[in-house]
Length: 172
Image 1: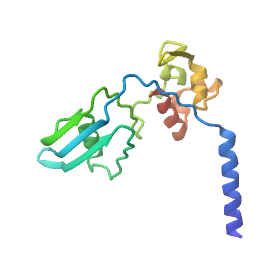
Image 2: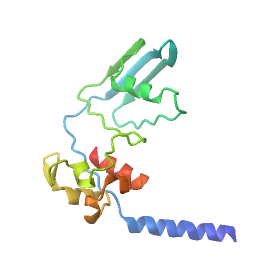
Image 3: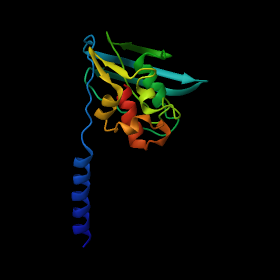
Image 4: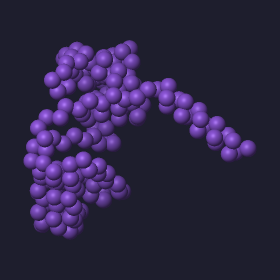
């Protein structure tokens, strides 16, 4: 009955995932960063007298993965800006490590340009993209993120949510 249908759906999903392919992500390493990415000690931040972050302490080390989850208005963006050093705390101490190059994308996709083509979004004004010391044609690079060459000239607005996320990863 239902269990057999569920197992069949799982098998179909696994086959579909294999058909889609694998994303290839090469990252240029640049200068080695220090071991500590950010250190926050009893950090607090308020806006208009309303506390947004209160007495927060954390140490983020190189290689750590950090996710911020919470309802709207809970202070996720404020905390991220404190971690990145884009905002100074009202109290406590926030310090960032050496040689940091932070890359992130927000789930609201604010950086997307709906009218741009995928190629122009990734490499404005050029058919080539530089990855570290290597030059790659933008259509080939988009192929590494599972976009066909024909899709490279499509407008960003035509992408699904998952495709938008892949495009933002490609741009990092």
